[in-house]
Length: 162
Image 1 (tube, rainbow, N blue to C red):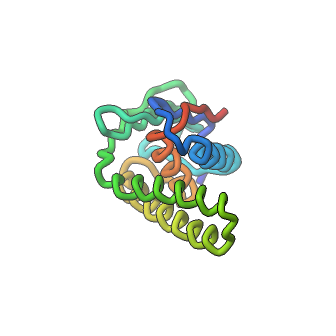
Image 2 (cartoon, rainbow, N blue to C red):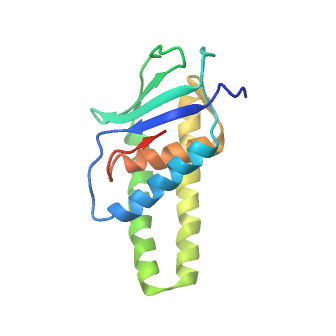
């Protein structure tokens, strides 16, 4: 992919706080840091990147608002969150389990939970790539990190990647 086919700015909005906020914040910061370092994002039919992306939840739909380097707003993409509901629920259960395992100092339990977390993120990334394949081309790592941000939209504070 061309160096233009990448995100140079991401914002997530409409986020609420949860008791697991510090763990969700950690996941958000890791996802944003990794996206800053490396991502691949190409809206189909537009070759004027890099792009800015604003993620939000509107009427129980995930909204992708993308702007190209020329400042042109691309069509808003809306995805139903229903297919992600089980994965998002699993994500929060894993976050809670991970926190308990850390407090108990159980390395083998932490490793098992981390494997489950990776599996949830992989499934979410595959689903995101499949559902967007005719609209946005992205690599697997970018999809994994965006899936993390989709989960974060359900908890934590809005944060901006620059």
